[in-house]
View 1: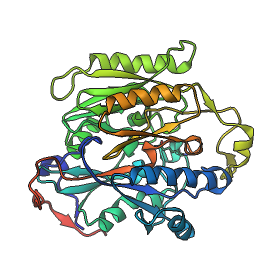
View 2: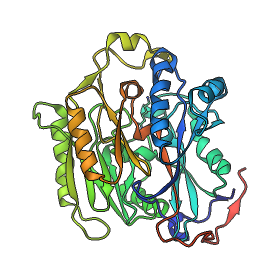
View 3: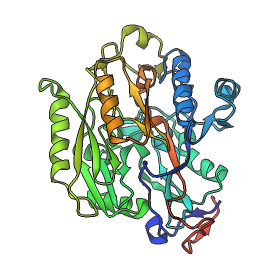
View 4: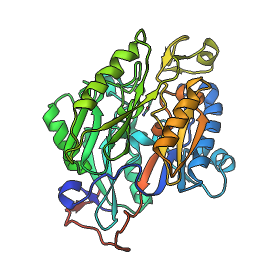
Length: 385
Ligand code: KQY
């Protein structure tokens, strides 16, 4: 594996494909952290296994497990899912597994962003986070993929969505937050996205889902379903604090023009009714340092937009809410060639994210790529020192 430091994906002809393009596989991490997941993550592990099994119906899944959970992961997961021992601080593959970019010949490389637990010492969610921060590079080594070193720029995979045709969606609330890259201007942040995602247009939504502790990642409020088409988390309840937030995003999306000069088609995806954590669930969580992770009655950032697009399925959350079925039908209509699998996800949501947040796709060959394509780019490399 080469660590690429003096070049960028854009310069080398690489870009991040849309999630709806073919995948080689998917990465996940086995949950273990008792202040994130109630009762030592027992219920969360079961939910993660269901997600992994659903994804593995149409693509290869690799699950990383720490030494303490390796044997358990190996016995809970079916044999066709690969388990590798790798330490992490928590289980958010979207945010600290590599972001993958691909060139026109189908060669895939990773991008290793800096990770600081969603805000570092300013408003991050745990400390330390160094094991998470080392995962992207280790995984590129495991997968025999060259990796771009961009650790000087803090970014989580859940804070971006791309259409694979030059457009990136993100939120101002997250990418302009003080805990990430406070010394960079909005223009400099855009430039990093252009260079490392191989895009040309950034659409900045103002915000995400209410009380989303990631500083409102885009992947909980809005996602591309195809080039030129997005789903947006929506509520008709004007009394809900989320109404104004979703409406502000809608306004931006309706005015936006993507990299190909298109207006976006916006599909509204209903939100479940407010989901709050119970006293009993809070009692199952260890303290984070000397602070409780959650307090009884706290609203969780529940959203159906937090789904994963696998080669053959849409793996989406359900909350045992009356809106579950309507959301499922809308996504099925938008992805007629994939089967929608809805997984009860409350035990994932309690950790602070959902199915998209616990997965990271590895792109496969683009349709029509020459087999056995060679990497592009005369990148300067150096060893990790
Ligand atoms: O949603 C995500 N991408 C991650 C959520 C992290 C929450 C930590 N408790």
